[in-house]
Length: 142
Image (cartoon, rainbow, N blue to C red):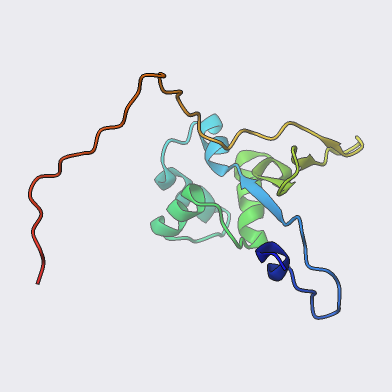
């Protein structure tokens, strides 16, 4: 049995395990940029006006990292601040699929191109040869 097959064991109810897990992209930093908010410190008071009291560190993590969990109260406050819907904050997609699924009201579900998450890699010239770095004398720790 391959390693991947060993990882996918049936669930407690006998259903097959998910072979294509769902994931999402968090767009809060982009919405802040579009709105002209340059710092996470500016977002804290806007959330507090709507009854969501978060420390500066919590607001920073909310913006800089993709949250695993988010209260509906916080989501609702963010939607009010940026005058958007949850669809504008979270773009769901299925791993392995080429394009994320994007629901649009009054339109049938359709696929849109997935944003590129792969960093651009510069091609090296044919004559490139790596050189071992000289880090100077090494000392042993005791």
